[in-house]
Length: 339
Length: 235
Image (tube, each protein chain N blue to C red):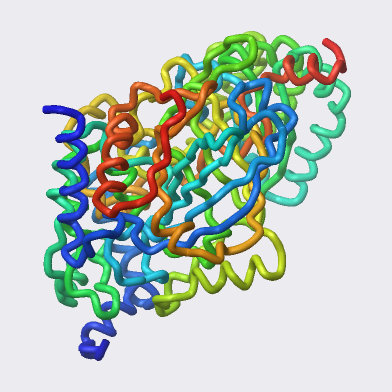
């Protein structure tokens, strides 16, 4: 099966998980907001990676924050993964992207597992667990199933839980996704690029690395007992940036032999060498949201000399899947840089 | 959404904060499940790993119950430590692999918390060589300490004794506690994720004193020797 066929299958599988998906919109991370800013690499960044955006010059950046769901209905307050896609605008109309999310690892390791996982995640009617069933869970010191959110009639939680209970590799991602909560601000969450990339230093040393954005404002989620609000994240960001820029530190963790280089379900130990690669400063919500949020198309494999993809099969599959998604929604093409 | 909650829903939802239910959980449910699904106490200290980053800045969190559980007993422990300050500092300098070390008294326990590089048994061996006399003085005040002093003559037993009092380091990743519990059966079928709270409760029953996660490090991956060399502060 060709790459484009696999990519189409992946996109179709994702779309099937969101019955109310609107053609012409992103299959996931549908609701989002585009922001403008700039990135300045740290003094040490260039000693680890020769890529242009780590040379210390001020680089214009476009960022799209998003909710993880592929539904066109906005539910900011629901417990959900959030996305932060960043485009670094380079010289000569070149660009490179870094796509990150609030989950620090992915659910599956391969394309085949991903297709199985999307089948398991097909939404099913949700019902509140009966009080007797809950009581039985409590007597077993088990977590009762979460109550459906207000207005929620369909959900994927039960299918995902069942998948996790059959596949140990998925347990970490699914358990964290189940408890991830909702951020009080897009600028107050950590975002992880999840996959391993290979960076090249000026002396030719090649290192496996993973990137994360750490918010300078700190991480903050809404209280678990607060009633969820459907629409506050974009307005909060507008108000925040009107007063003061929001900043994120780009952290790069260097893997060691023995770390899961090609497996995005396994995070690396916090005891790996961690380097501050630079600071992203967000200055304003883009005026033209159609261009900055809807038509812009990111790709985790849009890289440049100095950064390469690892052997992670999910990362490699994302390259074509993002292109299929872009074509389906007639989004703006952005040429790859010699990759 | 119109609420369709009845009184039974509200009652059951409120059980986790109901004092009577919590009493029942502590006195009946937890002992029952500990009997039905026994959990083995986990060993203390860092996990065995061959990866370089896992073998620097390791933590030791030693909890040693004092024999004399009174202010006098605590004062004796405090005096023993202060009396040997020079020996301790000189010993730590000589060991050369220690980032931080401190003694703490919590309730009726004398605790030693330290961050060191390298293998745990070699770390304790180095200590026996350099400050064995201090360990002897402190361990003498501790329950079941007599059996392993003088430590210079009971090296292996002393290392085991210390290891047994080093806190279990709960994994950073919640689901890894399930792997710890499975031990050699780690490759077997996965557990029901909804049982994770019970497994955590039962593990903390088996290991009442634990270190939560591996802890934050500002400069992970570097040894004390590398830090000293980089800052040009010698040895």
